[in-house]
Image 1 (cartoon, rainbow, N blue to C red):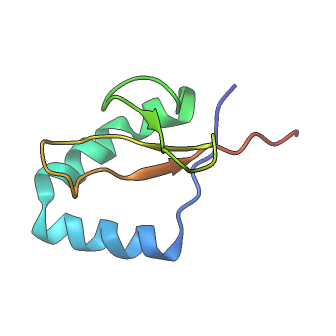
Image 2 (cartoon, helix red, strand yellow):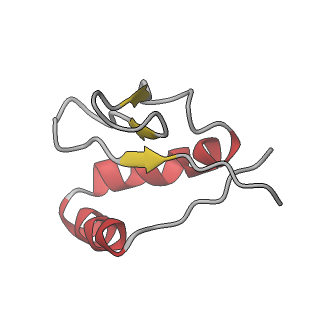
Length: 79
């Protein structure tokens, strides 16, 4: 199964900022996008469910910096 990646307005704003101010993290995220489409709950960046959150929200660590942990919400939809 292949998942579809939808971006929130906030995510688009952050990605535009990262592209200019943090190109290394932007490239790392861009490189794992195909992996997110295939298996969003496993793989690069040690994906883990957020504590106290819903079981569909995961974070991935892109670097040692605490601010470089994009959130990924996995929604399973039929069809």
